[in-house]
Image 1 (cartoon, rainbow, N blue to C red):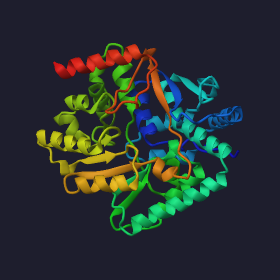
Image 2 (image 1 turned 90 degrees about the horizontal axis):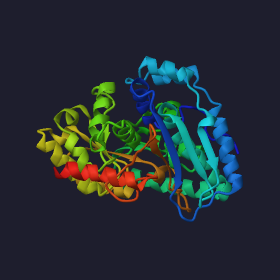
Image 3 (image 1 turned 135 degrees about the vertical axis):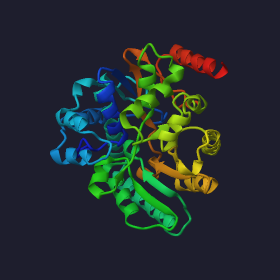
Image 4 (image 1 turned 90 degrees about the vertical axis):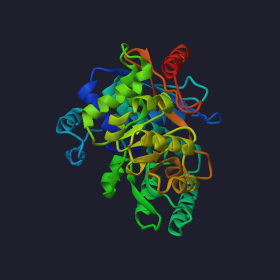
Length: 398
């Protein structure tokens, strides 16, 4: 196969926003990340596993170019000290353990500093996806169905069937291939739509290539590691610690808060007037989007903040039809935006992979996510999940 990842910019923007804050505030933190394939009918052959190893080695041979570093330096909230660090930074293949001892035929674990291991997640998932679909299927057939479906999506945007307002492409981790993602972004850029505005992509490499906006702020790992990686912290206050450290790094810049790491209801205990004012909006990633949006609007109102000045960003398993319904429901009540991944970057005649790389340890301690719906978390220690839930319950009830 051709080399899948050809630039260290080829990752989600939030890896750089979190990476800068990690570099400045948590450079000594160490994490373990674990791969999981949630598809029960998918199997990775030994040939696939060997190709994934080869691709990860190729990724680890990459370095940032001066042109890429200059591009990062042009982003308002990225600081020169972090750019200088990236000038010296390189991924380490020694941080990876790759095997076959799982029912799906593939195991991947990364261990090392949080600075390093955080950066491995997105390229690893992109590699696994492209290797699997290239080797398991006739790729030409998949590409054909991808392009046909993309044509219909764009036709729906052009004729007003879909009304999304502001939307961005978030699909690098689960894309069919780099070629497919690039084609989708190029096609979405080409036309102006009456009721939709294509804002950009989370893929920093393609944002640079096409001269569009790179999009992204924070992921669950930030709340999990900052809030649960320090053994002195009560993990029921994970959101407060994470938001406080984010504001320390960025002030009013780069501010979209993720609500569902330890349930949105617990998040709202900490998302009080100061944070709600400083952050430009919040991101939905699990649970009923309509109920969540109503709850956030009421929360802003209870703080005396006009919800129309804030953005609700939706990013959970979206397609254009669902996004249109959400936009219509909240229209005129707040700003609405969408981050849409798999539906744009890997919509073919075969099901997409449901694969993740999650933080499972931070500083030798278990960490976990308890989102607004069951099944999205991933922790190897059920005792810790029970402990975290007890901490949350005690706080919510007292």
